[in-house]
Image (cartoon, rainbow, N blue to C red; front, side, top):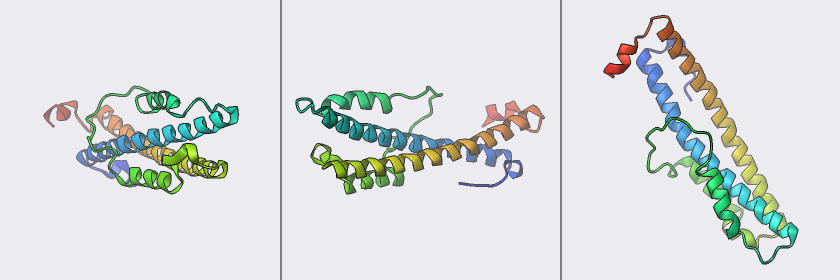
Length: 163
């Protein structure tokens, strides 16, 4: 992530960096929601086992979990989304964690394996959340500098209409 002082950037550089970070956030946000959904499925399977509910399978939880994480979240202004949003290094890392720890055979995992999977997914989700929080802080810095420039007359709204 670029760490340059926003005050040292040209207006075009400031806007470009902000747009870049917003686009990166789309990917990070998507991967975070997928990680949270997978973690919820692991926990749902753990709860199902704890209840001893052999008749109920995990697929009954799938619809609830997916609707909560993949379509939920706070509304934000729509931005064009890359159709390959799930095709990136971060998604690949999540898939690798899941593959290494048996997510695809969740209902067959031993309790110790499920605990390890939960720990790994929790650590991954925490790392992604921290990354996202840092990105938001940087976006806030860039946005504050843009607002300051418009407020102080260093930048003109007319310039937005021409670009």
